Image (tube, helix red, strand yellow):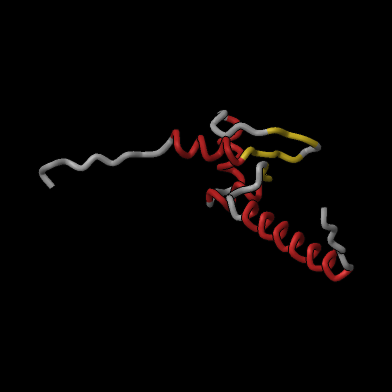
Length: 96
């Protein structure tokens, strides 16, 4: 069985290629969407609502949240579900 010799240059090239591939994966993963958990300020920016509106949505149970250490956290998936569930469909009449 033939043997091959691995040089330090080969190892350096392998390291650079491996780090490049890992970087590409991280960029691809970060571009997939929102973080898993959002803070109140991030939800307000995302939905373009005020702090009072967000509080009302929390209090009436529209948007589920978790409170830890005085900070409210919201699951991005849950917010998307609420947005889809409250989607308004406009029906156009044939007379228009």
